Image 1 (tube, rainbow, N blue to C red):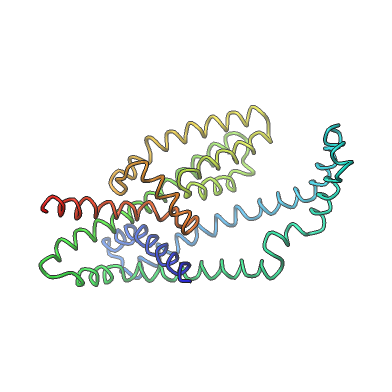
Image 2 (image 1 turned 120 degrees about the vertical axis):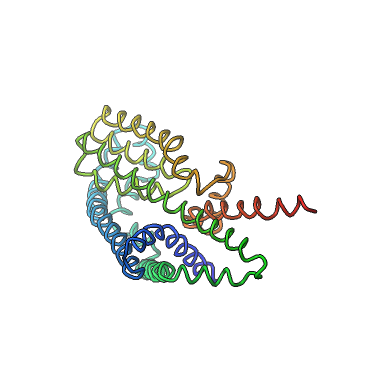
Length: 314
């Protein structure tokens, strides 16, 4: 019953740890911590608003065009003899056209009007709670750390402080590094699409590539498929160039960029990254897949720093 709340708390804490280096940098340059938190939060919210402003109109336009043209596309399938024979027997195309034009598709996606309202309400609730908790954790993070330190016995407090700081550093370092990786994907996608004369969709597709870059293991592959499909819609040459370019950049990102960004924060074997992402996704969905990797890095730190030395002494 508390799974949603736990996920939101962990997500908020991870985001706060990822944004904390920016807040600390401003604070060390003479800005009060509360003002620094406000500036960082306003910057992040501005980026999210700009991303929505770029993505929503394009998606809405393309969905409307698809809904209007889908009956024509389906009707053209009757030119194929095998599909025409199948349709004459089962009336598949007529049923599909009726389904698309009757509004049943939109209603069925969310379980009707009430279901759509619940999805919107839950989304707004999650965003508001996550925002409030993130701001709270950012503002009170030094005090939270002190509370954690005081829970340890005085004789072991220095060791606990070191381990807690390392765990916070690894979680925060992973989230901060993930923001950098996503930003690079967005910049590279925007520049490439603008050069390839796909500028009308460059901003929206760059946002899509950035959002999918948050997804461990498969996110960048899905974004490459989407970008390549759009490229093939312009011309086969554009599609092939888009496919090969982003496949090459994916390898650069995987073997050169990410290892350097995450070299200090996430020191875990590749197989554990895969298992953590899959397990987190199964338990808590997309957010769980994202959070599972830094949590695994923190647990691996305890394994190396606490369990192994203890076993060596016994």
